[in-house]
Amino acid sequence: MSNAYTAHMDELDDHEHPLPPQDPVIYDRVNRMENAFAETIEMMRNMMTMFQNTMPATTTTTPGIPTPGIPTLATPSPITPLNQESPSKDYKKKAPKIANPENFNGNKYKLELFVTRCGHHFMNDPTRYATGRDQVMFAGSFMEGPAYSWFSELLRDAKLSPLNPPPELDSWERFEQGLIDNFGDPDVLRNKERELRRLRQVTSVAVYNAEFRRLNGFLKWDDRNLLGMYYDHLKEVIQDGIALIVDKPKTLEKAMALALQLDNRQAEKISARKNNQITPSQRNPNPTWSSPSPAFGNNPPPYRAPPPPFRLPTTPVAQSPPTPAADGSTPMELDATTPRRGPVPEEERLRRVRLGLCRYCRKPGHFAKDCPELATRTSQLYASDTYQSGVCRNCGRFGHYAKACPELMMNAAELSTAETSPLQPKDTPLE
Image 1 (cartoon, rainbow, N blue to C red):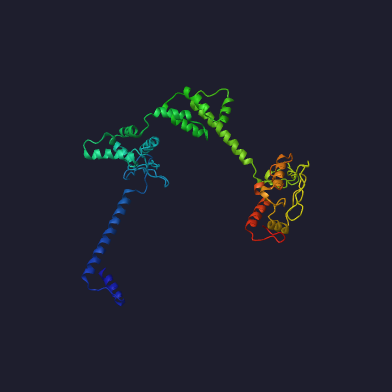
Image 2 (image 1 turned 30 degrees about the vertical axis):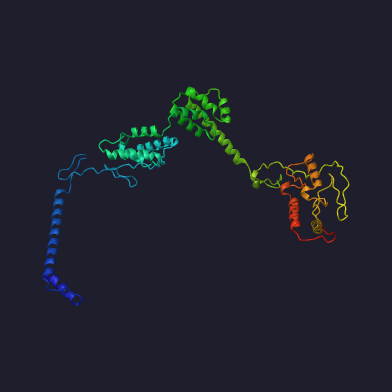
């Protein structure tokens, strides 16, 4: 073997960094590796020979009876699927995560909810909150204001006398009773009875039932005293449904179940009615019987003719002769049968602005908002038998009301222009 190594070392002489051929340390390491490798091969050969000797070429085995000379193998344990955790002795089930209670500042109306939330935590993870001290410390971490001042007094007493701490720190029942004595309602039964008598169904029966059960948990009344109160405080539509039933429930739970069923049915009817309604944007503006609207399927809605145009009363109204205007012109005569006036020409409008005339009757001394003729026409419109809703009471058009009438808005704009306009009349000077 040393000769082969020497030949190998001779081949390395041509390399850039050959190993030193006469180093005794390297020779010693190589010899020890060769000896260890030879011992390993010899041991494996002996094991193979022993295994072949223990298993003859032909063996007769009987089910259930071990064969002599062959070691009996233990039955393997069942394989756990990959998607299933293997059980172990140290396995600990994690508690579900729930919301922490809100900070309690001593408000008596929030004490019940705070105590209930703390009890929920203790039941959810009993291993973590096994002792009364752990439970009290958890509840104290969510206190503030006057409530924490009371809790800090307990901590101070425990610090001054560690061997004799206050009993409220080592018992959750004593701690809860201390909260009730200091921050609870002194007359809780009377107040809960008052709340129960004032309780009414406002939204759904489910909410009403939950609140009814909560308040009755304090009073512990029997069904005979609660059934009448429960029925009287339901909505009228639910009471009507219960009145139609011959065999009415005799217990509170059955009455609550029946009211909840009727309320669910009422909610289904309202939902179906909303789903069947068609918005104005989905309606066909010009429905015809030959081409029905897709929104209504094969049954188009009946055709509704548009409302007739507005007409002023046909009974003539006696009016005084028109008074000549300042420029000598005679204003237009108006009566109840006069049709709607058209727009005023631009030249006429500017002339009325210069002369300070009324934009409606062209008479001096007042503006359109104080025009007596416009007031008379408006009163006639109110008293008219042909008055229809949706019609402007000023111009008689559809689509707007008098407060948004374009003519009134134009008159107001002209009025503001006339008050600030530097124009002077050309034919009659203003005094």
